[in-house]
Length: 334
Image (tube, rainbow, N blue to C red; front, side, top):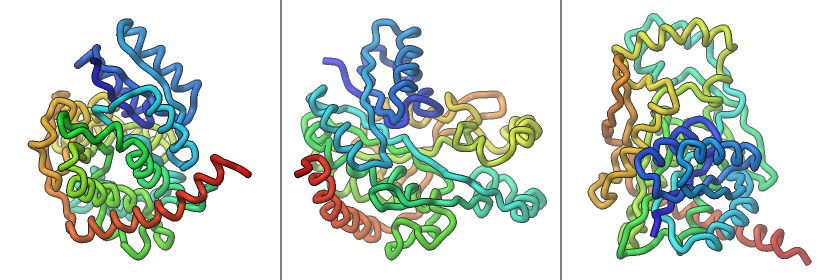
């Protein structure tokens, strides 16, 4: 029986690069592309099948910023498959990123220039908005929609005889200082992306604590500094044209500048080959690329308090209970 990997946000960027690389590693793998836009998903599938004609690639329409769409898509997945071996939680947004120009130029001449540019720490703010479900868009898209997806797909993921893997696309930009248990949606701050990625790291730790005994393991990855639709919106195109040669040069000194989606997917592909039982739940796996273009993976201990992770997990479970009633009513209107 073919193993099955479901990837959210699979129609472009790191998600599509990951699909290409997974098929290159194992063309017997069945890929399920969970995408918001059906036409882009079909184009991605055509691209994958052009290079791997014998591959099995299916599509499920799913918008992780809509809980109703997540539940509907999960139902379709459960009809298609008896189990999932890999669930790549990759879809994410960074809406309307604003660059702090003062901090940007100050960083250029600071000792921490490489660290700041590889993490964007203190450089970016975002203007968040509220979704139709009543949540902050970044929180729902990057984290809560994926959490509901996991909960919906538990029957396909939890098998003690053969473990399954959850693999999250997190970030070096995940900062403890931008997250609060009293404001998990980051309604009062200006860095919702960083907050959502730290929340991802917390949830990853809690999921391992609660599900390892059921045969489900979770890991988090940082793809490095990658040029995708997420990053191109930060600066005007002419600025990127000027900066890109400098970024290629910096890569000789800072290997976090992976730059291409193919390189950024390195840690995601590396985890595909690992025995999940052997992985450290408190480690984030980072993609790196040397100045000469060689990719490698390195683990980094996360700044995570396990008790805080468990409290956050329980908060999400309580939130799930509240939204379940709304979801069920919308699925069964009177």
